[in-house]
Length: 478
Image (cartoon, rainbow, N blue to C red):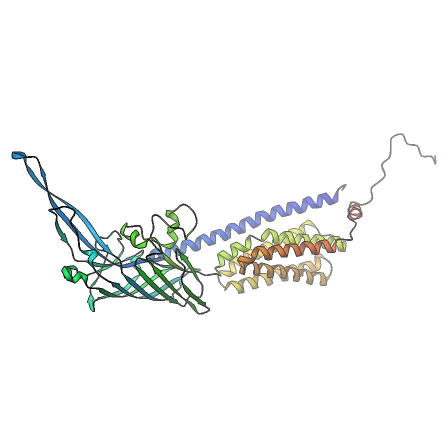
């Protein structure tokens, strides 16, 4: 062959293209399994309870005003009755929520869903109930109002397990629904109508509510009060705080976390937004109503939220997806190492051997995905990395002709897998670690090849050229 080096480079490029197809299939499989995991979570939410957003307690009162409207004069004079319906609403002057949640993971096949059970103790104080006393808009208006109701709105009422309400030391009957409120999902309790009549409305009202609630993935509370304090204690060790307000204090421990939010009406428009009947959204759906991707941005369609997500930082599908993004880098670095060994040792490596090495490297990602569905991610990663490093070390001992070379090659592959694991665990520092690693690899290649005469090397690979006879030349020895 006239250009053996060019032919070999072309063959290795063809091997790389074949490996790209294999890696594309593996990446597609990772995305498919990830999608099935999300589908399993939606299935559990449909049959169990979804992420929970809580609004309340609030006081609401439905009223009607009637007045007379006169049409015509004399014999044609007709008196008609007109009416309008409206609702009066009041948020607490002070709201204190003490809550505890406990992890209760659910399984749908191989897929784990982060569910929780919670107990909430709510104390709400209303300095006065004057806001629930109606005012007529017409001089001859006749007012009629129903008894006030205590309202708790929930994004998924299926999560309610029990609820009790005490108002002024008197227990109230808790009923389903929201008694005609704009927030249609929740529960309510009816107060005595006399509590908002005359001088009684000027007296403060104290409410005590106990609520047992379940949900999945996230928990959020709307800061609809003049002042609010929410304390949350949980045994979940991996919280992610979101919404429009971060907790004032937080402590994350291996056995759980605690967080405290302190807000006043000066920091949020939630009380006014409740009066405008903005939607009670779950944290995940807030972005669906807004343009842009900032989850902390103020929504013009959803109420403000204080939110915590119960996340799993070692989600096998997320980590497998991140690992697959480094597949080409792995194969390129390994091929460079094999090529460097060829140059330094003079041992020829066939393109088929490059293909087998690349397939072994690609198989690691498939092993990682499949094992992580049955084992903790750390153990699955260690098993897949050890198996592939041992296989490549064993194969390289024959490919390179020396046992020591195979051992060193396997150790180098194990080092690459170790670097990848560090990148997966330290997502925020992945760029700097990867950049430093690539720089170190390039520096090692440049150091090892700094004394090579590349012209002489390429000439040796091409072999001696046969002399070319010139037309009309005469041999002087004849």
